[in-house]
Image (cartoon, rainbow, N blue to C red; front, top):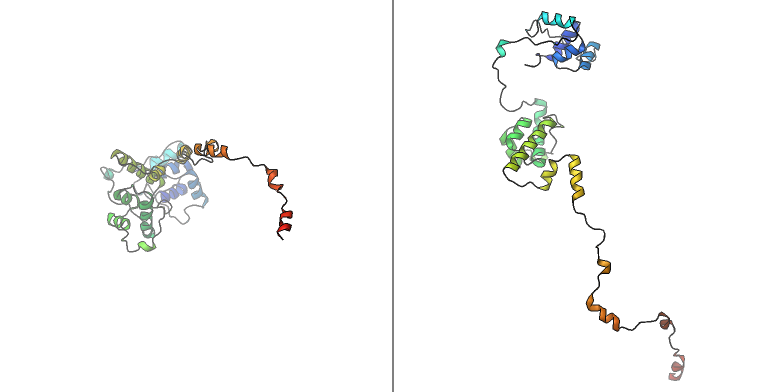
Length: 249
């Protein structure tokens, strides 16, 4: 347990009932110092009722007094013996009701742009089930005609770091199994600088075929030598045939 329950409400109570610094309260409640200052100014957590950490067995009065006397003192969360041996719940990620309708669009985006991801990875990223993923892969989902792929990071269903880690893990597994990746899949795993550098190394279409201007057909050389040279002036100095035409008349 790294932070108290109802962290923001606890911060509200500490701001209202103690003289500790904003940094001390922020470190204890896992909030930014400026956010705690906003609580004190009335700009943040408006209408939030303070949550007493002493009455709820999360902080001792002695610990608060130490913090008020020493601005550098870091508050320590009260040890709770009942929390010993508590394990993190295993299972799919919880998705709020307001965002559950966006999961099929996110699954379609992951299937389209990251086909290397396994169904178990997609289910863990956005908190869905394997039958739903399979129905979208096979395009048998009841609403597949109306679905548009949307980035799950943009919808807030997962973090960019979590998506990057899953993609890297899938790529490493694929490389270990000896499967060849396509150019598109390899480009997705590269950073922007690496991708641009690889494009410079690719062969480009030449602007002109080198050596074409010096290439001649050997079979036509003799024909060109046998042909008589034509003088341009002779084409305009044609013989006068007007006398022959008068005799014929």
